[in-house]
Image 1 (cartoon, rainbow, N blue to C red):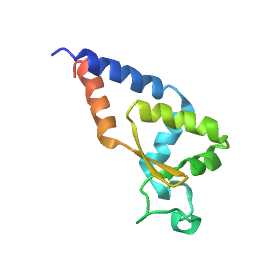
Image 2: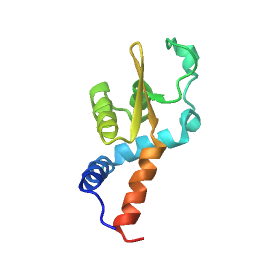
Image 3: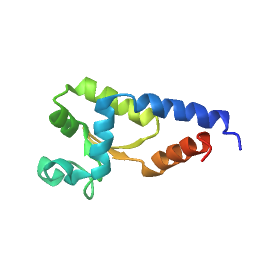
Image 4: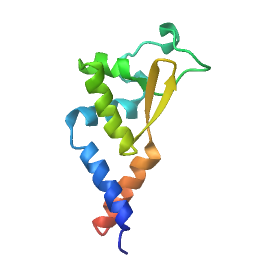
Length: 116
């Protein structure tokens, strides 16, 4: 069965997003969740809103990777535009969470393209 052109274009965006080691490491962090790197409890950081955000904040990626805010945001924007992460804003805080379903669909398309 042939893969739809829109699916191929989306997969190309995902492949470009995955072509950077920093973004791959960010996805690894997101796949492990907040417990991956001894991240502080967000409740102690004054994050507004109800409940604890599921994702990881831009500032926490900055601390882990030693990047500036603009560079960190750039990498996360590429992942978001590829559809691999979801964004949750809470005041000045922006949290990112892995979209496991989107990643699963992309892997399924790769299998389909490979004829598996």
